[in-house]
Length: 229
Ligand code: DX5
Ligand code: ZN
Image (tube, rainbow, N blue to C red; front, side, top):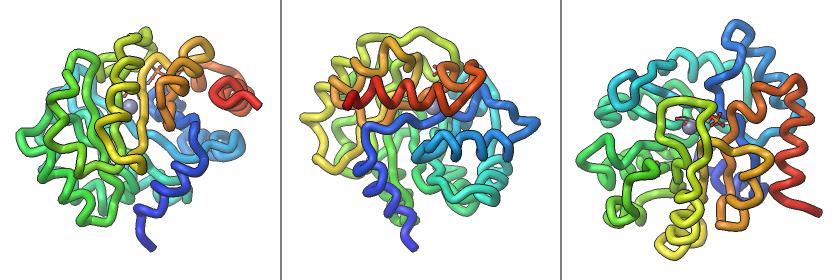
C-alpha cells in the first residue's frame, strides 16, 4: 500500500497535533508510543539530527526501524542533517512515511523531493526562521508538505518565533491546496491557535506534551485549542 495515503488522512484530520520524539523517554520507547496512541495522535514526528547541520545529535535509521516495528502510526521524519541525499533510501527502508529535508542542507532540493516521491513517500521541505520564502520557490511544486520552523532547528524547549505566522500565511498562496502546512517549535497552549489561524494544519509539539504528566490531557487540551467546537 502506498505510504502517500497518509497525506490524505492527515489532511482530513487537520488541524492535528503531532508529538515530536525528542524529549520523550527513550529508555521506554514502546511504552511512550502506546501512551501517544492512547492520546489519539495522528502521526509521530521524528527529529533526526546529525551534529553537523544542527549543533545537536539525536538518532537515525535504527530508531525509525524500531518504531516502525511497534506502531502503524505514520512516521513523519524531519531530517536536520547535512547532505540528506546520502540517507533518503535508508530512511525509506527503515519505514519513514514522510521524509522532510531542509532547503538549507542541500544544493538540489527539487531533485531530492522528486527522489522521495519516487520512493512513494510523502516529500516535505523545511526551512528555518531566518530563511526567506524565495529559497523554496524553486522546489515547492515537488513537495507534499511544507514545514515552517518556528524555532531555529536543533533543540526542543525553545521560544516560538512569530515570524513563522507571516510565513504560514504567505506560503499558503505559494503552494497547491493539497500541500500540507506544518509548523514546528515552541508550540503550546498560547501559540497553537495563532498557528492554525495562520494556516497551519500539522502542529508539532515537544515539551508541551513530554513535560506534562498526562500525555492524553496535554494532547486533548492542545487539540481543543487548535479546533474549538
Ligand atoms: C527542533 C525540532 C522540534 C522540537 C519541538 O529542531 O525540530 O520538533 O523537538 O520541541 P518544542 O515543542 O519543545 O519546541
Ligand atoms: Zn522537528
